[in-house]
Length: 482
Image (cartoon, rainbow, N blue to C red; front, side, top):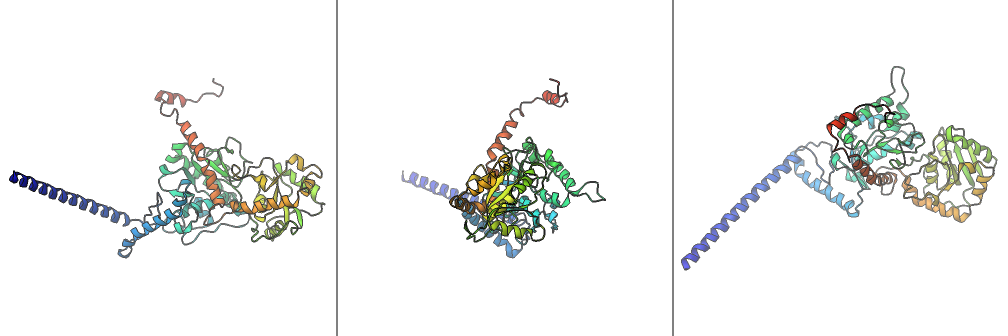
């Protein structure tokens, strides 16, 4: 019995030693393989593993820097997680096409170095032209924000990140500076058959409609910015399934752009913000202010009607003005000194004047029946704006009597609300929580359920169509055939 027990005990010891040796051998193999993978990964590119974030800028790895790469990746992960994940701010994962620079920063005379598609924003940001060009620069700020999402020290807000795999994305962003293209390159030179703006639109349509991402959704999950009313005049008719980011719907038929599908973004205000504003009701001597183009076409006829009704009224400033010479400085001074500022429909329902008024803490008086306003699904403009129907505004004494009837207390309440919401209309880099860039991304995020529903509905019968049915569908029939 004792011998049997000793033999059994010896067998257990031998088996245990064999198990431990096998476990040690397997662990060693896995450990070696894991280090081989890490060294292989860090030896070619500088990877930033924060969810799907990847720094696309190649990095030459030397013996001195090799050991620091993993530490830098981990540092990025910790900083990003501490800054963004803690507050659970992430709303959107965005895939952005690496379009040729001729579509974006190349329009700003930026020259690519080393074949890079994007400027290194850690070094220098290409500047955008000033004046009235700046009011429609929305695509510039959104593109910068996506680039900044890959550089943690250039970002203060975390509602959106750029992902490198389109299948992980909520939306697909098209980085075409369409407003700038229209403003600077829509005129055809004598030796050109087509303007550069028209050529770029044709190239864009050809590129997008050939992409797997576009085919997968029919373009419904793509974001195209066309803030200037005349931008993308040709391409919009072919890219209409996409979500447009616009100033208004004034020059769009409802089947191309509408409030259900698209996003209205604010203009970037041109006049200076009223910083450290200590003005009160009595310290603003001008009752009602308007300075701009008076004779306009289309819906802008109301401007000249109001000019004749108001030009002789006491405490009313209603004159022609432009951005030429000291126009912006004069407008800033005038709006900062006014209680109410007129925002009247011009060639289109919207204008930059509304956002100049907000930046001035001058209560906007909106006379534009067809205007659509940014973020109106979450922001009540009646708290800081006066709305007047065009048919009422052109009645003699109606508008001026209405404005004079607003008491000091009501004006101060609206002025205080303007100060609270003005940040929603500020474009800046890096973007900050609650600014215009972040508010636009949030507006896009609120459209995502609708986009997904439309994509899913479009796939209902896609798997059940037979080859015979596909052939029948390809036959062109007269419109009145049925």
